[in-house]
Amino acid sequence: MKLPLFPLPICLLPEGYTQLRIFEPRYKRLVAESLKSGDGFGLCMTSEENSTLYPIGTLVHIIDFETLPDGMLGVSIEGKQRFTLGDINVESDGLKRAQISLIDNWPAAKIQKNERYLSDMLQNILKEYPKHLQQYQAAQFDDIAWVCQRWLEILPIRSAEKYTCINALDHQLTLDLLRTVIK
Image 1 (cartoon, rainbow, N blue to C red):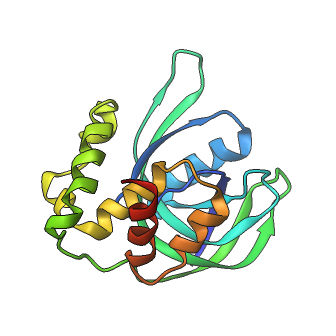
Image 2: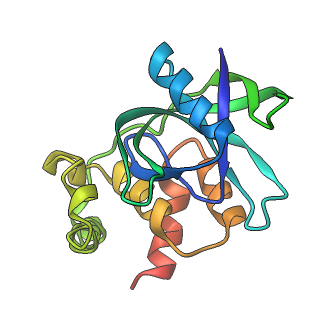
């Protein structure tokens, strides 16, 4: 599968939600192509300096769009599936397009009693962002893998640390990180 890429120093994982402000012509083209094809696009995390494009990204789909008051394009996206990057081509306007291979998402796991505080804290934080909270269902907060992914998206840690967790086969590394960071 070949997808256009949107490299950003943010982390978005499967079943995650975020909003983007689009102003560059190449990314307006990416949005138009994505809406027309229905295939989505690849969101790839970069290092803070934008010098490194990490080789695992997330296939995302556009779930809503609008013209913002400042005239920019606002796009709401949802993560669907993790992937690894293959060959990358850069088009004349700078848009990157890559061959990708889908990889398994983290398996769901029932939250344990001693992990419930992570879910409760996350719900309290998301109450400050009602647009984000309304995207999620109550049952998702009972899945520790899902909860770990949402924490990984919002934790103020370096991209390299996030990538180490993203590269894991399941949520356990992120859970261990959360236990040291959140007490």
